[in-house]
Length: 159
Image (cartoon, rainbow, N blue to C red; front, side):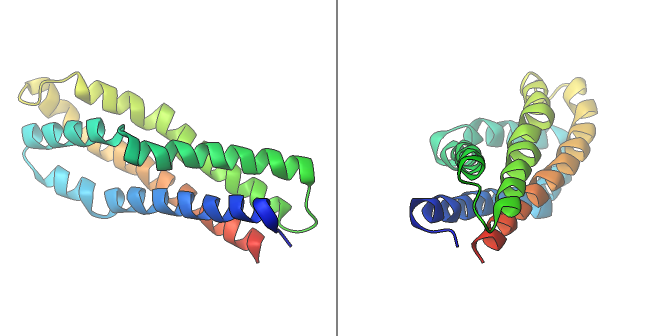
């Protein structure tokens, strides 16, 4: 059984990855659909405002903090190699680190940066917007599932 400070780390891992999964799920379920329904100039402007707001401390503390926590859980698991939950802890850490945090850096940040460079009212922005929404949302589904699966793996490690 996982106990002591290690237990606290894993519970915090469940909370962090679960919170991030909820944010990503909300974007996949209705935020991106709502933005896609707007005229392109409005959708681009709104998404750019969201992307700028996302990199502020409240979300980044949970998003990046969860990545640090997952890395710590993985390292501690390798060092302690507990009798129970080892596979679940390592899988949960990998899912979040690669499927949520890593995917953000390779699939979302470049798209967000490209969108931010466009003036919302230009033909270039209008042409890019449908592609952006489709690709960003597709990869966001993966992030949501990976984050939720990481939380589930951590829960299974505790049971």
